[in-house]
Length: 89
Image 1 (cartoon, rainbow, N blue to C red):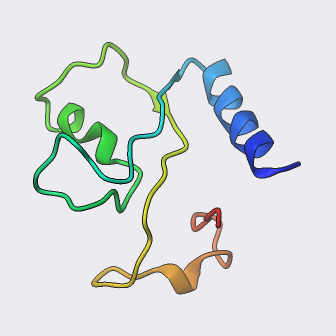
Image 2: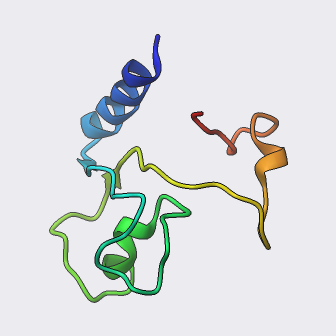
Image 3: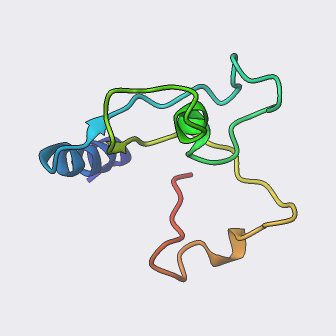
């Protein structure tokens, strides 16, 4: 299974459970001057999570492009060692 097939399988699973499938946001957010780049998969939901936007759904799934770099909360050394740290390179 290649990475495209894996992402599709992941999204299809959640769609079958009633989640809205949401497209990936840009790596460089065009509508948020507080961010230089997308560093987590939740950036695209920022306005909805702050209750400033109603998306019309309560459950969503996406495969979000993001930049993972060192910093204050660097967990790159954990990728592949725990069940919740995964990445595509």
